[in-house]
Image 1 (cartoon, rainbow, N blue to C red):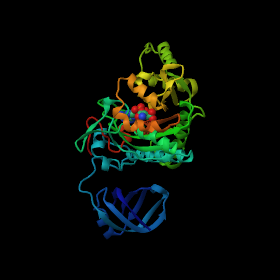
Image 2 (cartoon, rainbow, N blue to C red; image 1 turned 90 degrees about the horizontal axis):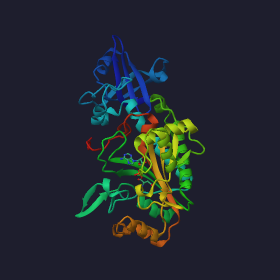
Image 3 (cartoon, rainbow, N blue to C red; image 1 turned 30 degrees about the vertical axis):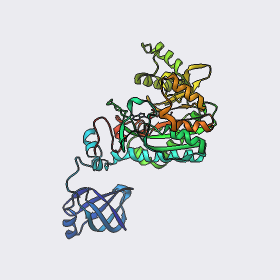
Image 4 (cartoon, protein in one colour; image 1 turned 135 degrees about the horizontal axis):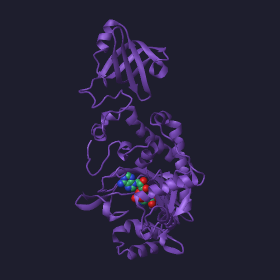
Length: 417
Ligand code: AMO
C-alpha cells in the first residue's frame, strides 16, 4: 500500500529506522531495515512530506496496530526549518502566543488540531439539525451600511468612498429572509471591534445564526435551540470521538427541557446569595453568569441555563417587549458552563413598531431603510438566535482561552498570521 503524509517522528536505532507518518486519519509507522534505505530515511527531518509504499504488517505495539515494512520512501518536500516545538511529544511545550504566532505548523500537533476538528463537526451538526427542521441555509453580506447590534463596537471601512461597516451579525438579513423562506440559518464570520482583551472575546468570530417565522414568543426559539444543541453534541460524539478522547472532553447532557430563569428572579437570587445586590443593573456581569451556571447545575443538574426577559434598555431596538411588562423583553441568553453562549429572542414584526422603537431611542429610521423595507410588506411574528462557535468549542473542550478554539484569531493585538 501507499501512504502519504508528514514525518511525525523519526527514530534511528543501530539496525532500524522507524518513520512515524501522520496523515488526516492518524499515525502509521514504517520500519526501514535495509542498510541503504536506512541511510536515506535517517536523513529526513520531522515534518518532511513523504510518500511511503510497502507491505502492511500487523504489530500490536505500533501506533494504530499495524506498520509498513520494506518501505520505498520518497520525499515530496522538505521543511526549511524545524517547528517551534516538537510536534510528536504528547504534550505541547509552547505558550499560547508561540502557538498563535506559528499557527500553520503548531496546529499540526494532534492536541492543538483537535478543537478545530470538533468545531467542524459541530457546524455539520448545526446544519443537519436545522435542515431536518425545514430551514434554508443563506449567505449574506459582511459589508453593510449600518450597525445592527450597537454602534459602539463596529468596524468602519471605506467602501469606494462611502462609509461602510463590517457586519456585526447577519441580524437584518436573516430577519428579512424569514419573509422569503420562513426558516433560515447562516454560519459565517462576524466582526466586533472589541476593545477588551479577554479570554472570551474575539474581533472576528463565527456566528451560527437561525431565524424562524410564525412563533408565538421566544420559547419556540428556545425549543429549536435545544434541538440544535442536541444535534451538535451528537455530531461531536459520533464524528470526533478520537479528538474528544484526546482532550478528555465531557460531552454535556442536553436536558429535555433546559431550565429557565427570568432576569428579575436571577437578580433576586444573586442578591440573596452572593453578598452583592445587582438589582437595578440592566445586565448580568460575567461573575453573575458563572454563579447562575453553578446554581443551575446544583438545582437542576443542567450545564445549560436560559436567562430570559432581559431589560429592553440593554437589548437592540428590534427586540420584542414582554407582554404586560414592557420594560422587559421576550429575549434570552443561554449560559453554558459559566459563559454566555447564545443570545436570541422574539423580534418586532410590524413596521410601525420599528418606527416607534427607533424613535423611542432617538434614532432616525433613515440608515435602516433597507432593513425596514421587509416590514412594509408583511412579516410574521418571528424570532431567532446566534451561537458563538468559538465559545461553544472553548467550553466543550475546557480550553482556558477562546483563541485555542480559533484557527487564526483576530483581536486587539493580532492581525497575523
Ligand atoms: P450577541 O451580540 O449577543 O447577539 O452575539 C451572539 C453570540 O455571539 C458570541 N459572541 C462572541 N464570541 C466571541 N467574541 C465576541 N466578541 C463575541 N460577541 C458575541 C456569544 C454571543 O452569545 N443578533 C444577536 C443574536 C440574535 O438575537 O439572533 C447577536 O449578535 O456566544
